[in-house]
Image (cartoon, rainbow, N blue to C red):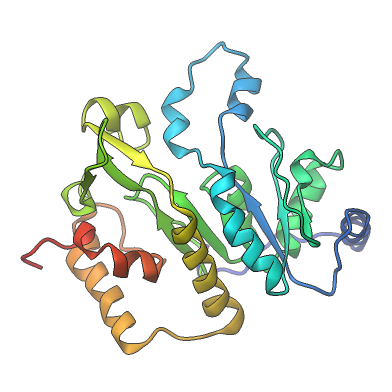
Length: 270
């Protein structure tokens, strides 16, 4: 995904359909669009209708209200924001021009889902099927509230922001480096809770805002990492990620998150 050009194309008729729909939603096609999708429990709950217990996926969910600060920052800096999703728990009201809660607009369609992602300058949100579209289309992707932290997005222009981990039932943060070599049960929230005594904590509004600002600076503005930031990311790969049994990632973690939480990644001996 990070080295091969996208191979999915749309017809001119499909492109024009998408543009017309976005205009109907009140968007200005001369201004950049950022799509946002956050996973919650409603989709699987509606799909399964209670036949299967999918609660082990709940650790992957995120709170849309933690994103309002970042959405407002984007809107104040010349971006339009489209909240996506086919089955979301709650609508989101942001009283600024340029925000569309497309998930509750009544205009949703599978084709328009694809086209909104294709038209986006970048995509924000949790790892799930809708955000996988960004990788497929080669659209930069900021992966937020990311779990499990032992895996990362695969796109060439992605950044990720992991959820912190804490001892179950407390606010005591647990360092990532103690668990980075795990392989068994990492995709199951119940395993983390029952076997490893760990819970996952949603990203804060400030963490999300800082990561969004970094995404804009790196992808849109094209700013480079400082020498100190490059050295820190290299240390992250060589002293932390080297113990992960998956392949070494090219995808960088949010720099501000790494700077503010170095004790979660490096023990005193590295």
